Length: 440
Image (cartoon, rainbow, N blue to C red; front, side):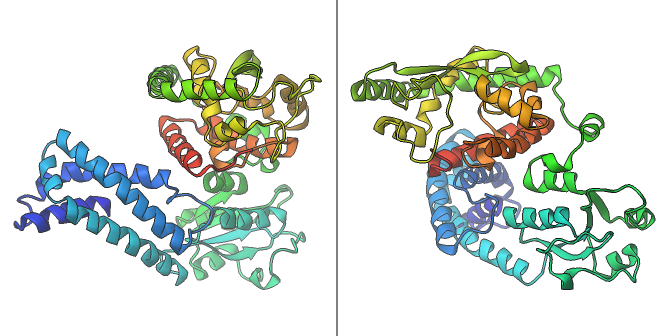
């Protein structure tokens, strides 16, 4: 849509036949489309979890366009044929706004009428089957529709409407054809003893219908590795956990470049913050705390102090709570804006942390969590990060239960870490900072 806004805008402005000037507009069109996607993601327009309200979507579309168009106008000065897009910037602005305001309701309307929907058949009617439905609702996947549930045992979850459970008089592959199923999700915990209709599932695969286990489905849809549905064997023999030399070298170079650039740009903010903390209360400006890094090795993490100096005078480690009275006035502001995390750029430069990775925890918490949560130590197979997948996908964690939920996202990152995933996390982090999400 953004690409076409530039191409059509240039064509209308120049009023030449197609292929003469519009071909020259392709390069600035790619640049504009990339910038709009980045800004829109930062504004939360692509955030999962349900469609935005019309008012919120309208506000964010206008804000994203208002921010991106001037930046793009400047960028066009440095790219081939950029002057064509500059001369048509008014047309591009109008087409971008119209496209953003018209296409979103149009696509939502198609989905509400069942067009473009992805139909699922869930094998199983127990808690795991309910977890599949909950995941779809949690992610706001209106394009995904559970057409029916196929029973394979006597376990029933009361949250599943009995009228949505198909009768087993027909074979599974026949039901798949009749209901026009695109994917079969096997949501059964105990699969031994001939519980599953394996021959019929194989027939579905032979017909090109996707068959997925619940762990793989939740990993793909929710972006987490569900602890209750995974086994050590699936982690050992499955795909993922790629951490080659090239990946590590590339990530280290990116960490150094980004950290140096941010430190230089944020220098005025760092100085003002340091003075504000010193003015408000006595005590150290920089708070040093031991955290657990890669391979379980401890390191000293740096942060701007956001709590009273006597916040843990008794020596006991405590989770931060909602409206924690230990937080100072300056501390509340720098925590909300994430300014308190900026000194950790030094940790990144020293190689103790990466820009993206699981957030490091305190040793006292780690020992307790390792004893309570399976696979917890796997998060220490990569460097901890200034931001991470769990930070942009889950609210602030302040308990053992929260840590277990966040671990599912950390495991997803460790298993699927890549430059593309890192870039997505950075964009999501920008959204979290802009809208002040998940702050305590």
